[in-house]
Amino acid sequence: MLEFPFIFGLKENKEMEKYYVNPNIEEAKTLPSSFYKSSETFSNVKDNIFLKCWHFIGDENSLIPLSKSAYPFILLDNFLSEPLVLVRNEKDEIKCFSNVCTHRGNIVINDPGKYRNLVCGYHGRKFDLNGKFMSMPEFQDVKDFPATCDHLDEFRIESLGPFLFAGINPKFEISNTIKIINERISFLPINQFKLDKNKSKDYLVNSNWALYCDNYLEGFHIPFVHDDLNDVLDYGNYKTILYDKMNLQIGFADSSEEVFDLPEDHPDHGKNVAAYYYWIFPNFMFNFYPWGLSVNIVKPISINQTKVSFRSYIYDESKLNKGAGAILDKVEREDEIVVEGVQKGISSSFYKAGRFSPTREKGVHHFHRLLAEFLNS
Image 1 (cartoon, helix red, strand yellow):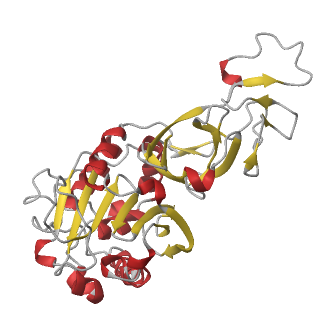
Image 2 (spheres, one colour):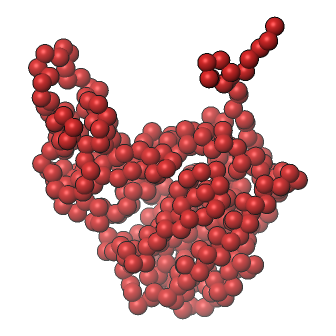
Image 3 (cartoon, one colour):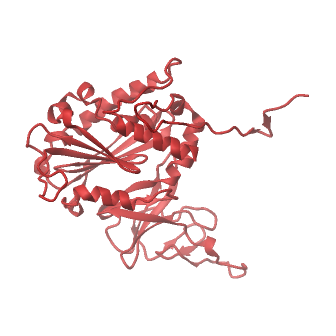
């Protein structure tokens, strides 16, 4: 008797691949090359990781500076492709809602601007600025209406100064992460940071999104890949600190030029700190320099293609083009060449997995353990 693996076009369910990374970095192996090549894993990354984490949205001063205003956007277009809308209501509270009408699924708000209410242009369903259903033409005879499902879904918002994060269905809290970041950067006037669109840029990288993060999470490659950056940083003192869903890399400078002026009660007072590189699981980075902040958002597109968005926030223009944050575009191009080379290399039939440097790759090991933890759950 013949057995068919496909019935009415549906494939038999296969057990999802399990990943394991030894918690002891001295014994651990990296994630296998199959992680970066599997379409099934790529899909599971979307469901088990990105839908359960926090996402950087932008700064409130640029997006919704006025009360009674709304800003529609697509969260991770071409990946999650989730239509959302930021709203600043009458009380100046910032909220985040699904931008999908609860009647027939039309997009509610298409353009940013001032709004008294949120009204769907398809059949006129109206919501207030708190996402609550208000009215709907020709629905007088509908029973048990409106119900809870007729309101717009609301998602959680957290902030670091003016910078906003949205949690769709977060598996962890980001508030403690924000607190840890503030321990080192609270002396900076981040509410005065201004988005510079001319210095903000998108890069298309022909690699898996996680390979890009792998590269970011270690300074091991700096002497080999970034000559200019290596001239500025004291590689011997480069430091990585691990936290729960975040890690910090501290770039120290060889000299006292173009470093932070740290207050006496700062944990790094007396040290020549050129940059603080914060990575928050799974895909965004906050890079603080004496001139301001570069935010990097790593956006998966396909198994082997990623968009990386750089957003520059400046508060001291006199320190631009100096120090560790002087040549970000050049550093990015150099990183792209390396990461795209790794993407080609993992396609080899002979490469399966590698080992970690206990002194230089703690951040990558941390990342791989988190990936395995979320995927296996």
